[in-house]
Length: 220
Ligand code: SAH
Ligand code: MG
Image 1 (tube, rainbow, N blue to C red):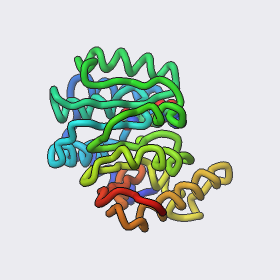
Image 2: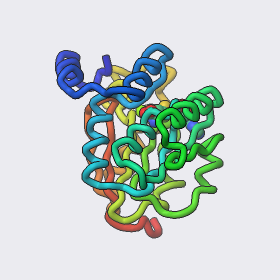
Image 3: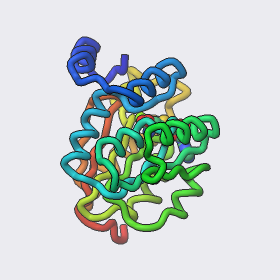
Image 4: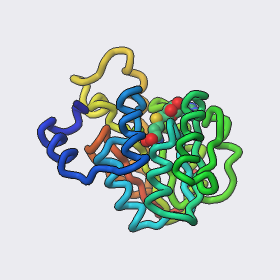
């Protein structure tokens, strides 16, 4: 239960969407068994459609975990995509490396090992797409570090923005998550109200924000 949409609706969507095959299916099973928070099925299908339309050549991801979303991106886009992904958890990094090798995307996917707060500073060049999917209390911080690296007409995708519904309504908020929820609300207010982005908030999975970069940030 995600608290985002009615359970019956969510169940219907999940059973109706196409199932993954091969390695991605295996990774979904692993994630389920070991509680790894990979993108929800309905989000993964949305991302695939977006990738096919936008055809990004360079993607920056914050939060690699076991490599599921990186492998999903690479397998959707094929040979020429370059993906840089950041992960700080050593066990996740080890699994991700194994999985990326199994998927045959070692040339396409590079893992930066360590804290995004440090490593994002070292990332060079511009990206067509940026996927934020790491510590939910730090999205604004990550955002400030990456937004200038996103090309104009590029897409910023932020996952888990409704955080089990807690961000949408206090009724769902559990006490120890109050700070994270407050920060996420501030982040969403920011990306929805700045004039150089067009942002859409989508209530699927754990909530997804799609932001299209219209212009450079400039001085605020
Ligand atoms: N994108 C993945 C899921 C990522 S889960 C997928 O959909 O398949 C979030 C991951 O972000 C976790 O593995 C966690 O270790 C990592 N993470 C959280 N905060 C981080 C930070 N500040 N720096 C680097 N990694 C971070
Ligand atoms: Mg996520």
